[in-house]
Image (cartoon, rainbow, N blue to C red; front, side, top):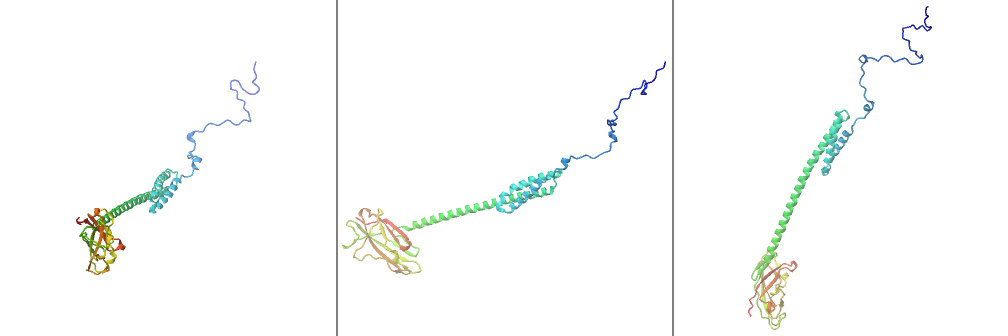
Length: 302
């Protein structure tokens, strides 16, 4: 007896076909061979491609280089030049590195800023050396002037000391004043006042002072400007001027012609306990307060 085949046409011994949904997408095809794919260039990251160049270092270097050079030209501001110059060199080097790496587009600007910064540094150093030399020279001049002033003051003091020493003479010594009058004061001699004497106390010892004045100049001099001498006793006290009617005293007065001389005689009273020595003070011009001093022991006897 024979068996009839199934109604759908599927024969025995063949695998049954899978049922497929007519509305589903088609199955994926086979993967392409990588060797047969066409070559395409490397795609750059759009974020990296859009990054702006790093030109800030070059701009900063140029600005600081210009500032350092301008400050360097102004010599009195040289001490402010080194810092912007140094920064310009540093930023210029960094900017040039960025340009070599392709991270900046102003490599020339960075190089110019570095050069200007270097020039600013050089100017700062030169100005510093120049200022140091000026300060050294000024200090040397100040020291030299101080030494000169000290030497001048010392010379003046020594001169004043010599002049002051020259003004103090022993009795019989001679001193020439600036107006040309040469004065000699002799050792005081005993003097006996008359009974009408004024200024002589009882028991005192009277002395007579003789002063000789010679005009060594070329012009006449008013000898009356000399005034009266002053006498100090051994204790330094002023002695009293003695005036009597004997006519032995003579006051220096009137004009003294060149080459002429005049002699003055004056009497003074000394206390007995201070009559062993005396000092005579005399000047030729009261308006100048220019005096000389003669001193020494007195030989008045008992």
